[in-house]
Image (cartoon, rainbow, N blue to C red; front, side, top):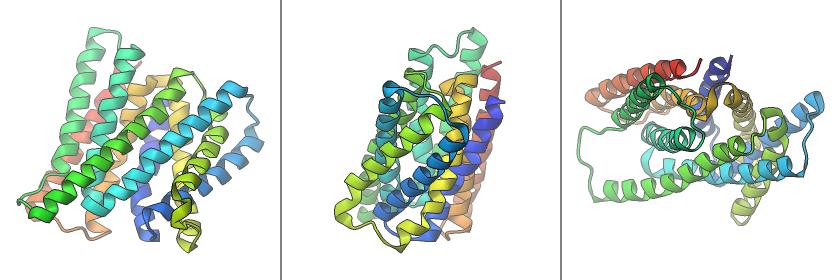
Length: 284
């Protein structure tokens, strides 16, 4: 069941950047709108499930939510420099490396030699696929190189936020239903503080409430999968949604790619799917 939860996350999260770009707005209003949607989702879910939580759980959830804002806000910002079809694969590879490192070294989630071998091959396949989907057939000009440098710098900050948001929940063993409300509160506070002076209160933030609802669905299924199959496997499987984002960036958003680059993208997607399937075998 944990694998199914993680795959639902993949579909939800793989659609977020595409939906947000279609809805419009800058990364401030996009992030703020997402947090509004997440907060609404969490309030409804809280009254339906009514989970028990103490001050520690609430504090951990808030901190996790704040780190998520750092991750999501900077991912949206990096799209302006490199585009969806390039940012999402790179972001995925960096996140996978970070979460897997914690999952295996800190939480000892791969115990047997077989799990370790399969897991390493799977992660290598996913990262190789991510790099392949972002490959370019031609060298860019000076402006392109500057955009690449700025985009990667922002993406590194984004990755730190994303990895911490997941790891801290696993570290304190907070389950999905307990985390969802305090996490959303932390997200809303973080987005408000970081975006307030940029006046994010506009029609685009209202539109992006939809992306918050989509993200929240994926977030809940990820948190439910963590105790079942571990952080390394669950987070890695959840990132296979990269296929939706990458292909959508090209065919729906009209980001220019040559025929050779499209072949690389499809090949990269195949590697990512293969890696995701292999990760399913690292946990019984």
